Image (cartoon, rainbow, N blue to C red; front, side, top):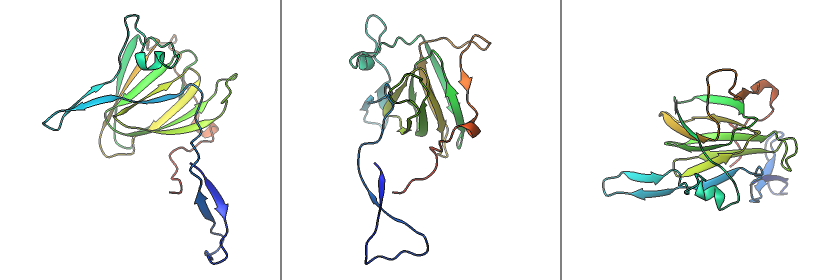
Length: 187
């Protein structure tokens, strides 16, 4: 979705206010980032069961394998995000991840893979409990929990986290990255 400046002879907006028309083209996506709907089953008491991930006999994530992506998670991490928490930018030189949540977060992504056909492309995703996102190596990610409730982020990785210098979990100074994915858009 995008917006195009337009003029109508019969409409005069105050000052330098600009009139836009929504264009409805498909949002730009980063190559290799995959957003998928999760199978969720409701019960009679207002609860639900969610299939967060299905693995085949070899440890491949079935939903990704069907799309030609070879991903073998070896660690599951859980992060409890306080209301209004924002964290950015993280990037992993070798690690791929799948994220699922118990609530809704706004996720910003930037492709910093030097040889990628979508190098420096940016993407915004509303990640809700009924969706998962696959984030490949070299794609920077940041998020904000804009809600008033805690959100649990479950993320599945293909590398182990070690709280020492061997962990390749890198940070990028947000002042040096010009992408404000939290900023409101026209709607």
